[in-house]
Length: 86
Image (cartoon, rainbow, N blue to C red; front, side, top):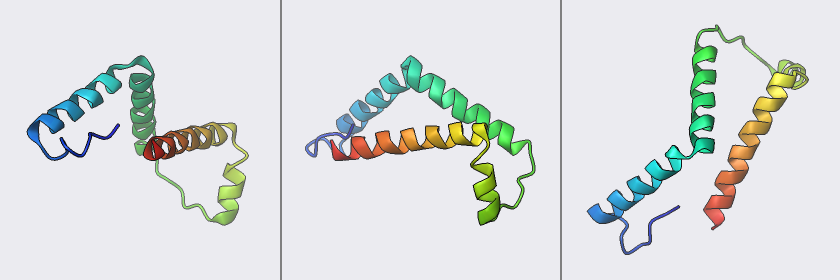
């Protein structure tokens, strides 16, 4: 959620915005999502990534894990887009 323009840039507005972020991050869904993303980044960093071209991308899209991951990313993108229009 964006701060009203009257408080944007002010110390009070910044404090209020940080409070909103902390409250959102404390919600179970947000905390679980952040933990999932951090664990996934950690797991990916332990592996050497392979080079993937267009054909490899199409092949990977048949993998159920990749499908779930892409679905998750699309859900995040959808939520960000919805929040931007509010």
